[in-house]
Length: 152
Image 1 (cartoon, rainbow, N blue to C red):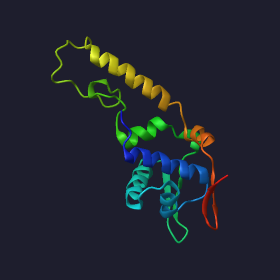
Image 2: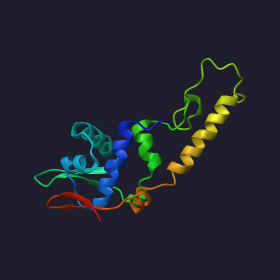
Image 3: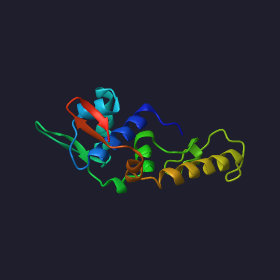
Image 4: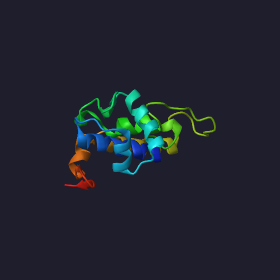
């Protein structure tokens, strides 16, 4: 599993929104605070909204806020939403397995699949235990000042 820029930006946006929770943040504010290109961020936020993690608010003071509590959002679920299955190879996926077409081993005897299942399980065990609330404890909060963002 490799985390793409889209996955990284999704997690960074969630952290920004988690730090401001329950306050609504505008896209421009998230983009500036996390140094994410605005157009790319718009796509990521739409995926997170459609996945049930965010809600959007219209109007002059509109923007995005978390739909779920930070302790209800696991990194594993977000990464799967953005990146797809966690398995390094298709036949080792538990959520969307794809059969091997060129494997020379009988079903259930492929050593590569067995090792990649262990890799997938290790990644999943870690990501499924870490919530956004856990991450927010590790990240310093940002506050808006008249001159810009700063850490507290």
